[in-house]
Amino acid sequence: MNAYQNPMVSIITLNYNGTDTTRRFLESTKVLSYKNYEILVCDMNSTVDPTQQITEGNFPKTKLLKSNTNLGFAGGNNWGMQQANGDYYFIVNNDTEVTADLIEKLLKPFETDKQIAVVCPKIKYYDNPDYIQFAGFAKMNMYTGRTHSIGDKEKDDGRYDNPGYTFGAHGCAMMVKKEAANLTGMFPEKFFLYYEEWDWSMRIHKAGYKIYYEPAAVIYHKESMSVGKESLLKEYYISRNRILFMRRNCNPFQLLVFTLFYCCISFPKTFLLYLFTGKLKHLKTYLKALWWNVTHTKYSAVS
Figure 1: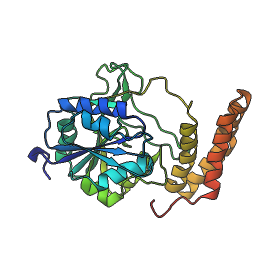
Figure 2: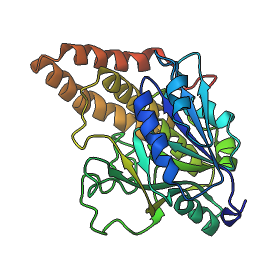
Figure 3: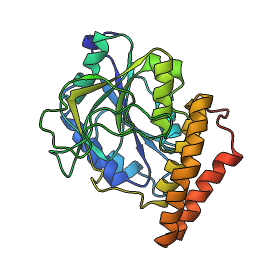
């Protein structure tokens, strides 16, 4: 499919007890200059049915899909992709606001290299719009399970305006070619939340595809620049899935080094930090995340 033939783009966003936030995202899409798209709002069994609020917004080309259960970030986006009509899937957080030419800019790189599977925009902080959150990802360290977002919390002064290939896709905003999604199996639902885009990125690369960063495409994310591990849910899934990711993607030597690193450095540091700061709920959650990896396999029916 030629990007200049205006392919259908399915914009997929999840809603879970955040309908006001979703409405603001949908309002921002009214500025889009690209016309051949649909928007799928995938509700993950919110406490309050969002139907009335979404309907009252009169958002064009928007369909509300309601799941009977919370499928998580991975499962929810997969569910949306399975019902989408697009040649491309734009997976995007509901706590973002788009720019007018975002879709065109994200589609353009697919024309230059047929092996591109995913294109990510420059992500900037909504509350600090002069600062970058994402300008590509550094390579994952397969001995520590750590990476970092290039340009994060740095002023957008032109240093990160060069497009190019990057090591991982950012789950906040990623344009995915349908063909590649079908071939590589979409998000691994075992992760539920966090690290799922990295596991998928690894499979995308192994399949011979590429991931691209396009700074001409800009989106604003409403995540705070000072966000931390204050959430027990975030603590659980980041700790659990960091280990799960390494179990699934390391070779035997890398996994041995990671295990030694984790047991000798990461675990004692985190354990003592939570113990001496009195964050016993965080400590309990952290230990629960580690124990999950002892009692669960690294793959499942829905990998």
